[in-house]
Image (cartoon, rainbow, N blue to C red; front, side, top):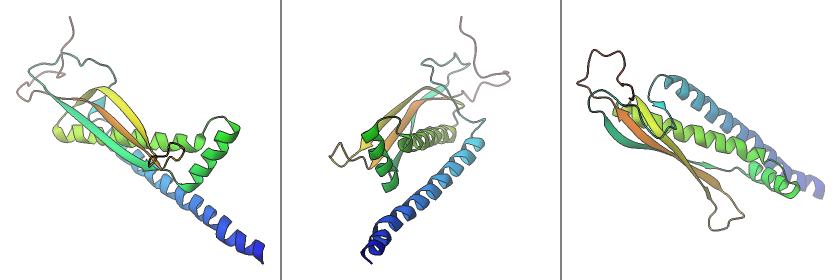
Length: 166
């Protein structure tokens, strides 16, 4: 009877947590893929430090996108097992991938809202959220930022809004 009690109160919540966490992660990935498809031809992003020379007087604006993604109990437990044996912590890799893609996507959406066609100088910053205990990561924050280039609206009739460097 005590074994059945242990299974119910210890193992079943872990299974439920794993299933719910997996479903939520899949839902988030589906949302990211859909929004990335919608942004394919809008606000292109480059990590190059210098923007091309553009016709007219384009506006430059700092744009940023940030996201905080929490770590579920199953990923935390899997990461602790990995840290004991060593090797890649694959449980956190999907967490970082989702966070990175979401932060860049939010930055692109803000740039597009401003009328920007490109973002240059993309940079990413990551930090762990641990409530003061470095051994206990409860989530991560990712920030993507860069310089949005809004073309000069007075320039018309050119094949491309940028020139060439001499």
